[in-house]
Length: 113
Length: 218
Image (cartoon, rainbow over all chains, first blue to last red):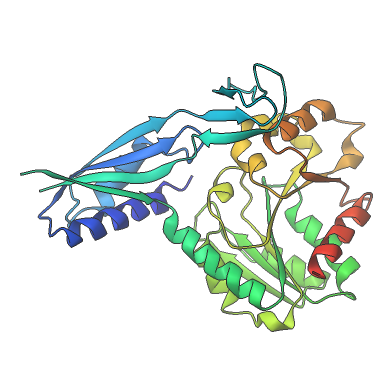
């Protein structure tokens, strides 16, 4: 997996915004992650403790907010949460759904001092 | 005193921006480009090896090969007739990203080519997350991997523009439920163009070659 480049990308975004705000340090970083997006999690914190050393973000805590997947059937427009392996529309059984939510992967906010 | 700053910035946005830059550059040169992805051993390099001799009199082809280490694949592509083959060693990374393709493009005079084939690192998870800027993403599935792969790697199957099912010559010998496989594909990626073929026997290569020709002479 690619936790390291992902962690570096998060650090870069956080430092940019912290510098713009003349922060002394970054305390928390809030990340939104969709159920269908990159499968990284607690291990990012492990990398963080190494790569954020000696930056404004040293010691910052990462918080992940998970967004459940939501699909919309393109035949009957039913909105549903996919159930495990089965992605078919539970109402009409059609294939072909649009993903409405679950692909998010972004830094939502940082808490600075 | 703690203060919250609202950001909302996509974590992979830097990669996406560079992918767009790559795309503009490839497009401006009139080159058609594909990103070949698959698990290790599905036949990425074999497909390139079989494709090159069938196309090399019709168009000029460059191959960019991503691998964690070694230049074995780029050597095979060169031997099969690629005008240029460039090896990108990812140094342990599990995928190519837009930065790596950008570096490879710097070594290429794109105006000398019609088709660019990028062979990604063998992996069914990570390459799906990192756009490169190619025109089409092509996934190679192979019969011995089993029919459950669309269900286990939905991110990969959802995002591709064409699907190759390689090693169909092994269908009589392995337990591969084609209906189950195709159902999974259809749910995730309705109507995606599919090429069942065998790199070993050459069966089914025509349709794949014609698709490349049609797209390259845009």
